[in-house]
Length: 242
Length: 140
Image (cartoon, rainbow over all chains, first blue to last red; front, side):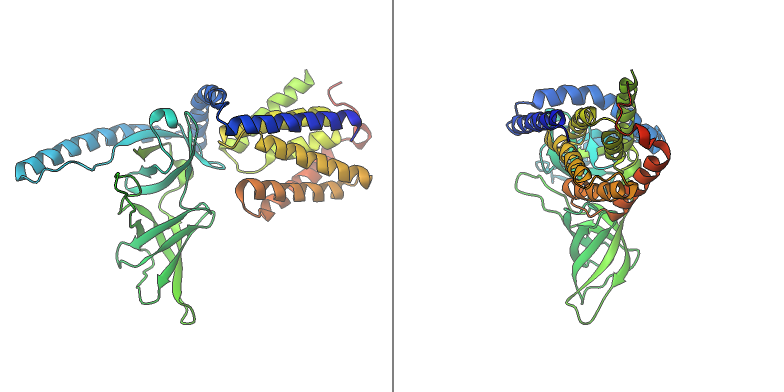
């Protein structure tokens, strides 16, 4: 490389390091926010194009919110009627649009929308993931199939407990003791880890369907492949539990 | 003007990579431009595109830009050391670069993606890049 290119390379590397340090200190969050705000609407439309532009998903989202509100009211009325009313621990949900699913799952809600790290993202009663990185206006969601993901689950039919670990495109159900019964076609649901503030993964969220059970008498645990219940790449709207 | 068209083309490729196909098509394009046409502008493009990726993928600003530039720089050093103009040598360099890139960013050993990058680079380099113009600035 000639001297000019070497100098340019060193200058750009130095500039990148400065940007990195400024970003880590939070001084560039407003710059990030401005660019995200500018790009988000376009990103949403491009993602819709990538998923085939299924407009009914946004209609389902609005209908679901209305239905949830109606059911909540009915539930509260019934509890009061029966005299078992108590302070609700019902979680609030906010609708989020999916911006990208190509490399990471990115949604258009961030710090400014009261999202916090660890907030759970769902679609109907299916677990989509947890918020792991956030900026002012967008967040990245860790999917169950991502390699860093580990979720404690229980099968819905047989009640077998284990851990689901992400493998990239599929998931592995492991640490299931041999005496537990696993059935192909059964679904794995979250056991839940709600803390005292009411935050965390609630129990009963579906994670995936069990296939290809592997059991060996020489090993302490049995395992199985778990496939996601829906194609994450086709999602346009999800809900974030606040 | 041609450089502006190239910048537009790379931005379109960035959208392709961000929203449709999780393959390092942008890095492959930067690699080809850097090695076959213009190193200076290739570095600047690597910086700009890396910055864009960091914002849209919520990575710390500067990380992807540094990675792109360091990989291009190192492959350039090897190319000069061995005076390698052989397309197979460049194919091997892009294969290793993609493995390092994917491992750093996604913690996976993406051999299939590396092979894809190698084949694409070799095809494009062999059939579409005139070797006599290898060191001339493309946009002049």
